[in-house]
Image 1 (cartoon, rainbow, N blue to C red):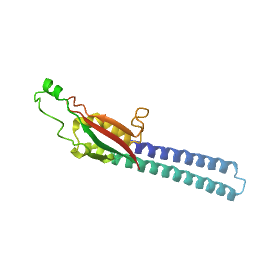
Image 2 (cartoon, helix red, strand yellow):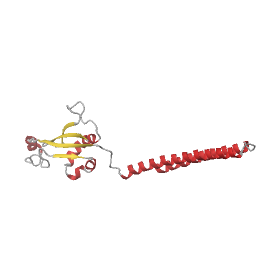
Image 3 (cartoon, helix red, strand yellow):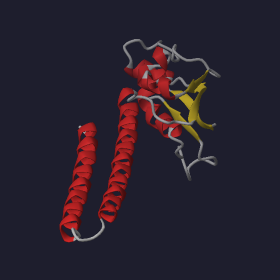
Image 4 (cartoon, rainbow, N blue to C red):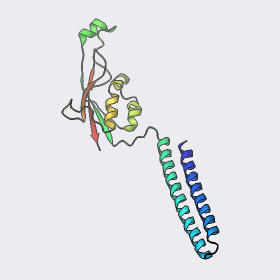
Amino acid sequence: MLLILYLDMTLFFATIIIKFIINNYTDNKNNQMKSNNKTTRRNFLKHTAVTATAITATAAISVSCIKQQKHLSTEPNKMPIKHRCKITVLRKELYSDLQEQYLADPKSGKCPYFHEGQEFIVENEDFFRMLNGKFCSEAWDCISRYVYTALQGGSIMRGWTNDEKVMITCCNDGTRPVIFKLERIDE
């Protein structure tokens, strides 16, 4: 749809300019029949050159806009991100009293998915694929908005942590939460 708009805009301006020149040339020719024919031709050539330049410029702008639109539409998940996010597993907590009281398996223990000290580096492509299955979907659901903020170069926790590029967060498992450290890495 945007392509049609740019082409319509180019044709519209070209038509207006050509009509103006033709009308101007005809008026000048009728009014200046007595004057030198070379002057009329010179004016016509000047107007034609201006028209050609205007049409070329409009077409160049349209082509540039179309190329930008094609670039955006062919790579919808590719954003111009110049940041990465490092996720570090700080701790794996266990509330055995809550597990014994509320879980069907009271001895389920700590989260088996992560281990302390484990690190993940998230880039744009990884974000949209949830680290290609290398990350727990429940934990990803809890932290992905902060990871996305870091990938966009935003402040993860301005005013809350002593470094706005760092955040301490956790998954939503109430009996065995995993504590994560998120860090924005600026390139």
